[in-house]
Amino acid sequence: MNKLELAKVANEVRKGIIAAVHSAKAGHPGGSLSAADIYTYLYFEEMNIDPKDPKKPDRDRFVLSKGHTVPGLYAAMAHRGYFPVEKLITLRKLGSPLQGHPCMQHVDGIDMSSGSLGQGVSAAVGMALAGKMDNKDYRVYTLLGDGEIQEGQVWEAAMFAGHRKLDNLVVIVDNNGLQIDGDIADVCSPYPIDKKFEAFNFHVVHADAHDFDSLKAAFDEARATKGMPTAIIAKSIKGKGVSFMENEASWHGVAPNDEQYEKAMAELEKAGEALCQK
Image 1: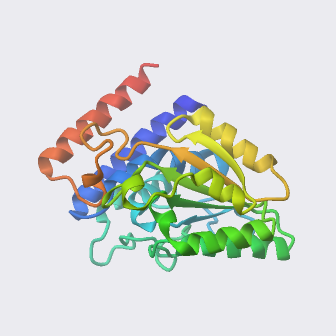
Image 2: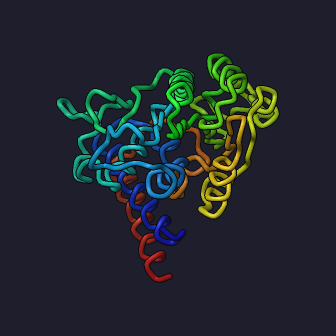
């Protein structure tokens, strides 16, 4: 896909996020929207996956460590063909497979159940080690929140991954600067993020989370890096794509009401129309 096609898909992913969270009357729109372009790039460009064969042994693996932003993952997976887009509005509904955090028992294509912050990255490291031990060439990707990396378990996993030289592992940090309690720098600053990963023997790449050229360059550099895992620090905007949600910590875990839903969807429809004019 070229970057215009990716942008169109990402806009549809954002619409799916808003529709799902509004329908559920619960969920996490802010961090889902900030990661929408990352999800899109991973599922439509970067990863070796097949929605028709979601358990194929040589597939690349993805672990959503910041599991609360699963509305974005579901939306990307739906548009990629894992399940019908119409199912997105069943998010968090009784009997729906689309739970509020990823659950591998209920959705084909989810490689690991996650949600307890800090734990997903450890699972991803284990998958990467297994790939090395089995002489497989699949790659493992995991997405963390920048607030999530305040968890100590993240750094235990990083220490292990760097020590084991897991160059089939890519850790992506969605660096939107906000967490549920406010600015990450005020709550418990994880900065400098890059120096910390470097200290654990990671190759570090900086990227613009909303620029597909920048994401491509980052993932290409990760793929070319041998002998050490890669951390991509992806600078993003919380709530990206919906004006009244952007850079507002209050939209971390709140669903839009009917009026806000209509306003958000109108903005995204307009953005989609503009992309079609290009």
